[in-house]
Length: 228
Image (cartoon, rainbow, N blue to C red; front, side):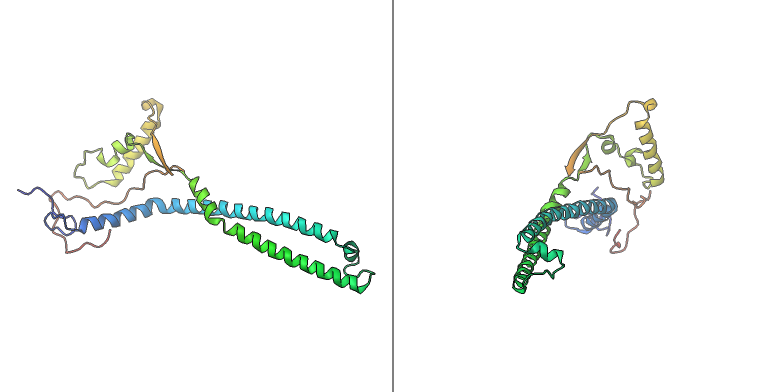
């Protein structure tokens, strides 16, 4: 007797070349990742972008502040500049000196604008480096292999009995387990160990719906199930 189960998707006899279960597993993994990580990834992304943008703006402000101070110092050093400003561009001096001073001021303003553009370009081009840095600060952790949550998952509490994976009951058992683990009167508190993968602790993914197991076995399904 061949005790190997038929394919759970197309009900074909056990065959290593049948791709149905592998393909459906990939779909289920992607869907589980989306349910578990999408919200957290969006939160991490917003946090990283916010801090990276603020850092770029701060760096740009420091560069332009130094450049503007040098620009003001240069203008103040020009002959007749103080008189020119005192009379709002119409000082009581010869027109030749006024024209010469206006040319120097215009050239200084153009140089300042070119410098500000260069500072902004240099700041923005640092985004990849800055984003990598702030992403490196995020900590993702997976539980230890000895963690009770790994060794004794809620759906194993009944010994994998054929009860259709009753999620309503599993949810209550999880809550009771949390209270028992954290209640000093119920026994010593067992602290879970984690090892870091990359920033901020990420708990396990939410429980995904699982089809019930029928006592009489599966009826032969159609040629192909739709995606989960």
